[in-house]
Amino acid sequence: MAKVISNKAAAMFFNFFLILSLLLILSSSMAEAGRLFGVGFGKPKSTLKCDSVFGARSGDTCFGITQMFNLTSEVFTEFNPNLVCDNLFVGQWICVAGTTN
Image (cartoon, rainbow, N blue to C red; front, side):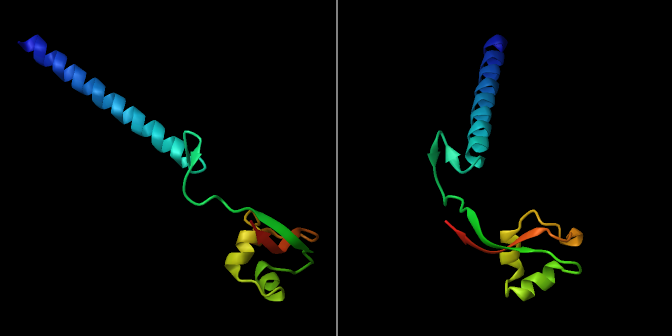
């Protein structure tokens, strides 16, 4: 009787482990680009095409450039996601106008 109970407990633990593993695999595959088994869901990521760039000059700041081109800080950051505003250098290309598709 005790052996039957331990076999049932082992089988339940094994089934729980399999279900947990399946959920983990599904959640990690869904997190990658919103796809599950090659089928997309959700909104596709939009890509930005920079239409106009500005070369930073001595003394330029991100705030000054946003004011110069009448951009909000959100749009400016979307155009330049990897820009480090505390470390601008002369001649650095900064996107100031773009389109998304």
